[in-house]
Length: 215
Image 1 (cartoon, rainbow, N blue to C red):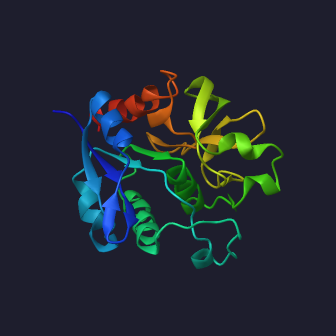
Image 2: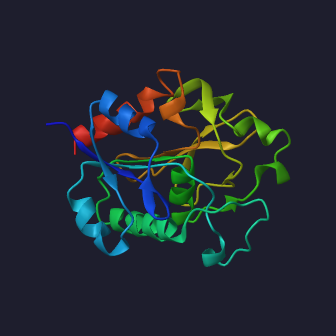
Image 3: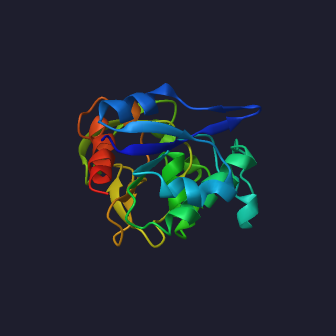
C-alpha cells in the first residue's frame, strides 16, 4: 500500500486552499496524499493515522504570539493556520519516527518550534537577498545535492535551534535543516514541488515517501 501523506492546507477565509503541485508531487513520488485542515484539538488523532507529513509553504509567520514585534514587511498567515501548524508540530513530538518534510514556511515553522530565531526580512541582513523571492532560481548546496532551486520567500532562519543546518545558499541563507535524533525530520527553504532539478525537486519529495514506506 502507498504511504498516506498528510499535507497541510493554507486557510483563506472561508476556504482551505492548497497548491496542486504539492499533491501532484506526492502522487508522482509514490505517496497517497490527504489534506489536513487546521484543528489543533484533533491533531494527535490525525497524526496517529498517517505515514508521513508534508508541511507546506505560505505567507509569513506572525511573531507577535511569540513575544517578538512584527516586521513592517510581514504579510502573515491566518492565525488559525499558525496555531494549527504548531499544534501539529507538538503532536508530532509523540511520534518521533514519523517522517516529516517542511517546505519554505514549513521549514521556518519547524525551526522556530525547535528554538530557532526567525529572520523576518532577509534584506535587512543579507545583501542581494532578492534572489530568494518571486519564484527566482538560485543555487544551493545541501545533503540532497547541489544545484539550482526555485524560491519564493523573504524570511528565513538565523539558526536551526535544536536541529542542525544541512544546506546553504551561496549568500549564507540557511536552505535546509534536519533533526539529528529523528529518522526523517527535514525542512527545506526552497520549493521542491516547483524545482526542475531531479535531486532537489521530486527527489526531496521522494525521500519523504521512501522514509514513510519504512514507517
